[in-house]
Amino acid sequence: MALSRKNERNLKRLRKEADRLWAEQKSVNEHAKALLASAGSEAKTLRDSELYPAIRRSYDSNVRPSLDRGFAIARDAADDARVRFNGRVIPAVATVGGSVAGALSQLATDDRDFKQVAKRAKGFSKDLDKRARKAAKEYDRKYNSGGIGVGGWFLIGAGVAAVAAVGYALWQTFRADDDLWIADEDLDAPVTTVTPHTAA
Image (cartoon, rainbow, N blue to C red):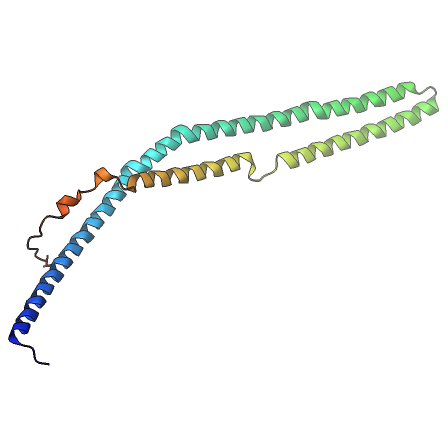
């Protein structure tokens, strides 16, 4: 298909214009890429210098003391419960067993009855002592066993709160504020010649 000279000139002019626009577009894309890389490195620097230390300070001043107080309270409550059980419940049961054994031995009137009642009371006292020891072991096994416990759940909750705080801080950092952006009228200015940057 043969083109007229006028159409060839127009086609040649359009090709030059397209090449110029393509070069300008490449230059704009390179500039945008460099700007994006710079923004990413600035965001990382800001994160490392401002965000992480602020979160750490907040954790150290607000969360850690509460965790320490909670652990201390839980530890004191567990120690108090163990001391009360071992110091009050077990001796009380043993005392009752001894009192019953003593009362039964006093009720015996003759030697034969006395020996039989004392033997039964002694057996009852031993049985009661075994049951008290078994109850103490069961209590220690049940309430002093390993596992996640209240403190573990509290730590998990604190971890979730810390992750939420980091997410909120990131959202606040990268949200779109109107006063941070360049006005639209600055972008409508005419574009002057742009020369592509060539690597040496």
